[in-house]
Amino acid sequence: MLRGKSAYKLIEQIEQIESLKQKGFKREYSLKGVGNLSFHDLQKLKLYAKVYIRNAGYGFCGMNYPSGNIKVVLERFNMKELEEFKFSM
Image (cartoon, rainbow, N blue to C red; front, side):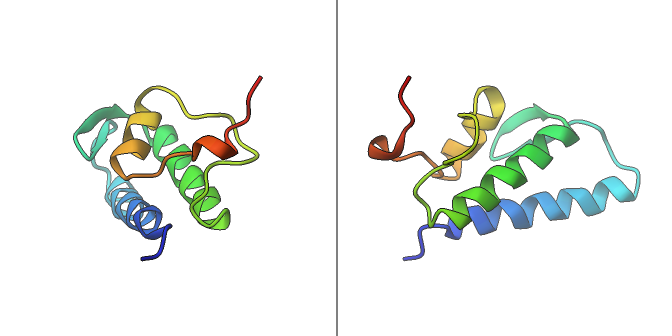
């Protein structure tokens, strides 16, 4: 199974929401039961998904570790950073 398959699904859902926004729909959005997402949050999620695909499903190397609602959405799409690839401080 392709590791980045869930990332492609996330991008597809975000693009559907973007098309609704262009038609003048609401300002707050929800994905996978996580509400109160702004349009900026959706853009960040899309970026994280693209990086996840680029890294072949092994995490978000080169980006800040996600937090808040963005982290919850990524976890619900099974897009998690693998332990051996986490940046430790």
